[in-house]
Each structure stands twice: as structure tokens, then as C-alpha cells.
Image (cartoon, rainbow, N blue to C red; front, side):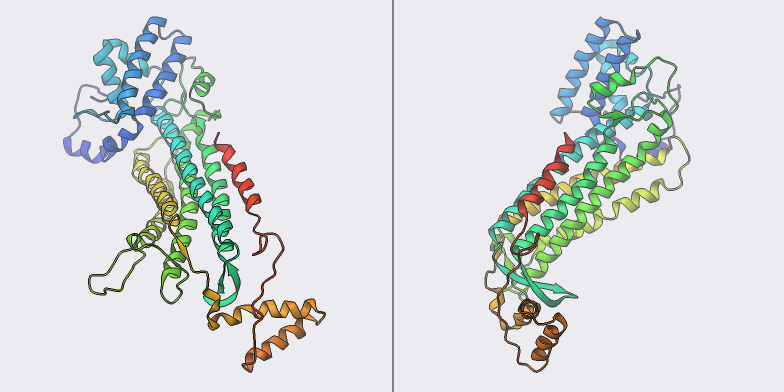
Length: 430
């Protein structure tokens, strides 16, 4: 069954090529397609295109289909093109010709748009929830280990004292910044395209404000052409947010892989959280974080993939846009899995509290000693030269004391203020 059926069947090879993975991917849209249809027919009844008793029958049947979808039992039958066709087919099976009335004032173009907006809105909320869980974990660890010093590096050379409080807290605040992009993507997504039809509106007197309110959108895409142009633009905004979060998570994964190495030995995990070697009996590999790093690097390519897919498309709907599902659907799932795995692993992280006892880290404290001399009255450049000459002649003896008090430093992590940042942005998700 095809909504565009005109009495002929396309060539089998053509159909398989053009449909692609759409039938499988559309299963994730079934619930949202029903919700969009329920809002649409409520509106149709108010403008005289459905009788009240017809609306009640359609709503009851659609509610049954929605429950089937929520149970994971929705199936797109053989020969049925997509989720929209399947829902309409199920309605006509139950209600006869009445089921065919739900498409008045709609095109598959705005129908799939509203499905995708509703689906992506929920996916962004799920991502935000997973980000918040990891954020809370990082903040907890930041406070727990705020007094445990570790080396800080620049150019991968020993630089200045850092702390596990700073390290965990840095990734927490970075996630708060990433959430700003996620919230922006949510705002772009949370607009109603329904009523734009094929991208040029409808001669029916549609009440687009009503469907906007019924579906819980914050606003609508007013210009019907702009509504159709939001296909691809919405996915690109979502992809940029996914990429930002993946970048932060990928950096964290890289740090953990490096810190687990015996040359560093800063962190470790219980044996059952690592993997071994088929030939080297001593190995405890950070495979979870290596896979996470790889997945996050791949996710950072998603905005570019969408940009290339949509770069030279002319105005209006083009079938290329169907391929966006192949890119974005797996990306949201993959990111949530990575975030949840990072949270799970960090529950079990073990921190080395005695790193700086090793004399190879003595030079970490040169800046501390330069600053100490400057605070005692010596000009900074003279203090720098004094400590520098001690290092040059092998005479440097570190004081190994750290006293940082300014906002965001080792001694003043501002954990509560970073949490307030995250709360403010999280509230934007409603």
C-alpha cells in the first residue's frame, strides 16, 4: 500500500533502492506518527472536515495503534511503504473509508517532519538526562578527590600541579557548555511544521496554532516554505550538539586510557572492568574507553555528513532528505550509550593518591616557588631567574606546597556555581 498509489506499481528494483532502510527506521517513529495524526484530526473536526462521532472513532482506533507502538509490537507489513502508510492502512482496516480522511490538509512531507520533530525532541531530552547523570558523577568525584594532587601537563610535558578535583570538574563544566548547544538544538526542534503540507501550505482553513498547542510545541515554523526547509537544518543542529558532547567525552576517554597506562598509573579499575591479552598475561586493557573514544570520534563526523548530504539541494522537498534518518537515528542512540557507559565506569574508578611522591614530578612546583618569592617581595622576573638557575644547576628543591584560592583553582573549585550553570540550561528542556 502506498499513499501516492495511482494504479501502477513501481519496478521492484527501483522500489528497493528508493525505500532503503526506511521501513526499519520508521518503526521508531510509529508512536509519534500516531500522536501527530491525533492532533491533526482534532483540528480537522473543528474546521468541519470531520464529524464529532467520526473523530471519536478515529481517536479510539489511533489510541489502540499508539499502545501497540509503545509495546514495541508495531510492524510495517510487507508491501506497505512506510509508517504513515501503515497507520492509515490499520485505520482503514478497522474503520473503512473513515480511515482515509485523516490525510486531509496534510502531505507526507509535513507528516514526516512532525514525526521527526517529536522523535528528536524526545531523543534530545534523553541525551540531556544522560548528560546530567554523568555531570553529577563528575561533580561528585571532583569534590571527593579535590585535595588529591596530580601533575598538570602542557605539550605533554610536566607543567604545574593540578588535582583530581580540577580534572573531574573540568569535564563537568565542559558538559554544561555542551548542554547549551543541546538546548539550542532543542529550541530549533521544538517548532511545529504541521500544516505546511508539501511545503506550500493548503487551501483548507487549517488551525496551525491548535496543533502546535496539542503537540506541546513551544512555537511553530510560520512560513510554510521555511517549515519544509527545516528538514536537514534541524538534524544539523542536533548533530552539532551531539558532536560537541562526543568531543568532551572522547577527550575524557583519551585521558583515562593514558592515565591507566603504567607509565602514568594515575587511575585504575577493578579487573572485571578491563580486558586482557591472548599472549601477554599481565595486560589489563582500557578497551571500554578505547571503544568510547572511537565511537565519539565517529560521532564528531555526523555534522559534516549531514552538511554534505544537504549542501546543494534546491528549495522544497527532495528524496535525499530521507537518508538523514540513516545518520541521525543511530547517532542519538550511540551517544546515549557512551554517556551511560562513562557514568557506569566512573562509579568504579580508583584514584592514585600518591602520584607526586615520585621525584620525577618535583619540577611541577617551580611556578609555585617563583610565585612564593614574588609574594615575599622579589620582582617576578628575578624570582623566575632564581628558580630557573636552581633547576639549571641541579640545585632545585621543591617546597611541594600549593595554595590556590581564586575562583576555579585547586583550592576553590566552584562546584556549586558550575552546578547552577547546568541547572539553568537544563530548565530549557521543560
